[in-house]
Amino acid sequence: MLTDHGRYTYSPITGRANYSWPGGKRLAVYIGLNLEHFAFGEGLGAALAPGGPQPDVLNYAWRDYGNRVGAWRMRDMFDALDMPVSVIANSAMYDYAPELMAAFRARGDEIVGHGHTNSERQSVLARDDEAVLIAETTDVLKQAEGVAPQGWLSPWIAESHYTPDLLAEAGYGYTLNWCMDDQPVWMQTSVGPLLAIPYPQEVNDIPAIAARKDSAAQFAEMIIDNFDEILEQSAFQPLVMGIALHPYLVGQPYRLRHLRRALTHICAHRDDIWLTTSGGIHDYCRRSIPDLIV
Image (cartoon, rainbow, N blue to C red; front, side, top):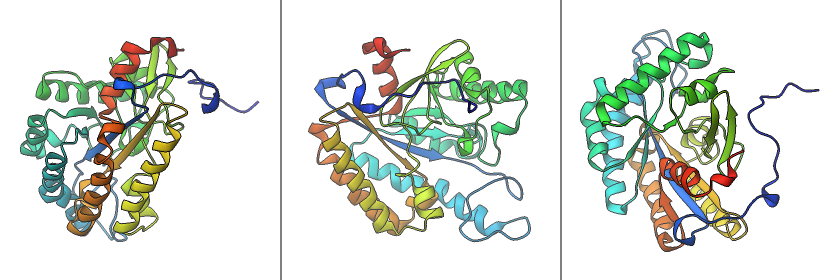
């Protein structure tokens, strides 16, 4: 027998219960905007070019462009398109760039927990230390926003064997860490169900642009093609499409122009889809389709 995670069982998408999203919509679409801060001269971080000896000024400054410029341009774009956003935020952002966090708060956007910094992985921590990290991150977000976050995305999608249990114990309702489906899936934890909401590793600018070296136009076409195809598929099952974005990548001017084109295409179908947040999907699943809880 192969070792199993014990969080969910296999279920083909063609054999599940049928339901609809609010307003009878069949496709839910959300933006996951990652706002991240990195330690200077140490730790993890995406790289524009192979890093040299620390301090790696080139890659640190490239990532910081996203907080200083890119995210602000993206905020203006989301305003113009009237798109809600799930802001996936390191707690370090509240000390480093409080004006940026306030700007998205003013839009009424959801804030999703994303650890303290993307210079670290929580998967390497002992169980008690990981619980402290989750608690401290949650407290920072709750103090700033006036409400505790419902959802969590681990920095670098890094989980320990205990992460889903620790999230549920800390009061989280959903995780974005598991990318195994196009529908929300209820996962088992030690204290009850935790919803896994689809968060893409394909329609995601880091693997697309930083890893596969796709161009700005290719990434935009990927978003459009994925949307058009999954919208057709949603006639047969209710589905979720997430779009994962990082301002230091798609906030660059030439990429932003192509991203705007892709999102404008999606918004042209506003009447056919549920344009929402990951938290909105969680709330609807827990409130309106509780029979799907395993």
